[in-house]
Image: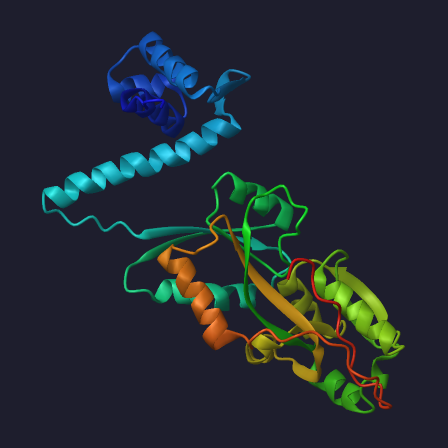
Length: 325
């Protein structure tokens, strides 16, 4: 088994943290050749290049980024151990790095993460909002502890991780109070020709809405395709068009954006997942997030069955279950 030389690791960590060998020399009271030689020995023992040149600067490679995160934890824990043994309070919060898929409304993300902030021990959240594929790449190299998304990790994914279903809810359509009052009449036929704000393509909600509209033979007038849910709600608040939102945040959407519900499409189901590299969740904040979502926030996931079509053409079409669900 390869024995890790912690002195070499310390030199590497200092260079990476300070951003240059010159500043690390000042911190460690060593010469540049001495530090460079020790880092080269560490690279040989690990079998990976940790730095690469970019112009006149050194930047971390992908392996270097992983090594730096582990080294940071190692030396922070070492400092904490010394403080504990000397009877000094550490004040170190529990760290949780979470990736949030850009298709998840920010209000839903907050409701999911809120239990992590209510633990007895302090928690330091690091939140990253991005495309799911980029977040999963970060999860695979342990840059993130968890990814929150509205679609499960597909079976064909090269990322070794596990889906944890948090729950599901229906979908509600919103508009300004004047628009909502008008569109509630003859629902859902009143949506024909109505101005509509659509999520961007390749999102779960977009596919579900298109399926429902096609099933009901409704053709709204799409005025914008918007990726960011908060921006979509702002456009809806301004009266630009009707927008859809998960029903779990109905009250917050009405209050914050001063809009009214037109109708609930309960047979369109929005599912939310926590994806982690652990099959059995251990991080206290992650456990709190999952337990709270399943027990208090969402409805329990129910079987997806196709219901008979009703004469009223009301929302009776369920989207097919998501892959890997």
